[in-house]
Image 1 (cartoon, rainbow, N blue to C red):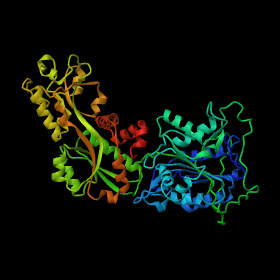
Image 2 (image 1 turned 30 degrees about the vertical axis):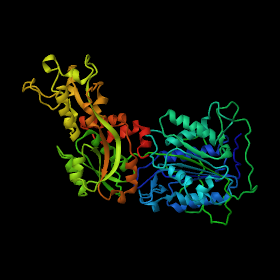
Image 3 (image 1 turned 180 degrees about the horizontal axis):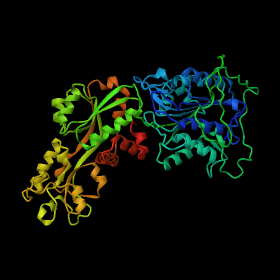
Image 4 (image 1 turned 120 degrees about the vertical axis):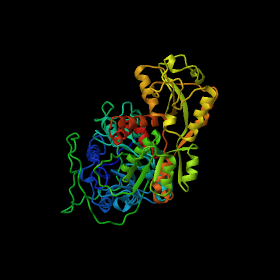
Length: 596
């Protein structure tokens, strides 16, 4: 059976940054602080006194955060809970996690709270148990530290430790637009306030983990992970209010090691305002605890028997009017749909991470060789649409010394397709006797011809040789007045046609298409991998971005829908930036895995 901590011997420090100078504001964080404070002070949870639940909203510097945690650690004799919500950032050279404060900047750990420093302070004092909740991007770095070396790793191996993470160490996390709370904290609060039907009387860490995983999976959001040893999961966060009579039943609570805990000293005069300065919703009529405590440090003995960590995550929404002074990264592409779409995607992702990406729009008919040459001379940092092996000749001739971050999509294929309404055509060979005078619209369209590489040119020649089917825009059967076809004009008139497309492509999303069989295996010559290429020295200058790019992957459906979003925006003369943001909102699981 779970055990609630003793109220008089327990302390909570809730830290949140909702306003930023160089990063996007996160107004939901203020609501997180109010909601969690109300729950922890309520009768169904820890029943903390107001002075024992410290809220540090928009702290001025990291010493303010660490002083508050240190003071609570010295007072607590049963359980210490430390919570942070805000931007999670990475130190540029080592990739260490630091927690964002109002003036934090990407890559500059001295502008935030280094997680290692927070961890060391948490481990001081006399609490029998420690709970740390991080609701920020890359919060899994804290879990990684615990799994690796250092004090936390050692403590993770003792009996009774419990670690719970909602996002991996390299992933973005989630703050959905229009929601009161961030994704992880909102779900946690819902479970603690509403309870878990058919759950235990007390919602201990194991029960919360199981329920969070099920509910977040149902919503398509990042799933939590856990690491535990023996009985640490019995520490309860709340009564299960979904059980009949839960509010009336007395719950077992821990016994404080010190029956006379020290009282809170009054807040220093002239200190920063205690409560979140933005309006927050009413939570059951109870105002959140708002005391900020500053005290001198006293000698203590660290006696850690349980360390429980719950880690959530948050996505940031870039704002065009932000005057960020982060590192500049230049993105380039040739006029191929996959390269263009992914360039727009990474512009958005880098902008969210505090960088200043610049997208170099290609001139008309820009050749791959030209882009490789621009990268080789250092004027373009990254391109995400290199096709290999199709672009190998250009790479060898014009792109000497470039860094290959590997394929983000493997085995893109050339396919001959017909509209779904076309009947009686199953193989490419069946096209040999079709011509415009039979009602077929031609010559057959080819995105391979519009977005060429060496392999597509070879395949087009082989198609003409093996099947007598031309996709090169020329046909003796057509008069000079007729124009080459595309799927749009074919669908408008419901006319039969065929097209040579490279999969994935936005037209597979736009139209219902049937892929024709290739009995001669001609199209095998068109298989390509899509790679991210960087200029020489990029990894040395931007090691964290290089890691993200090496781990970056998209599925065929994801790439097709991304291309479709970008193409639709351009077709409507709209900014693709908004289309990419909308695509990210609809692909929340992708957001979490993009940098995994």
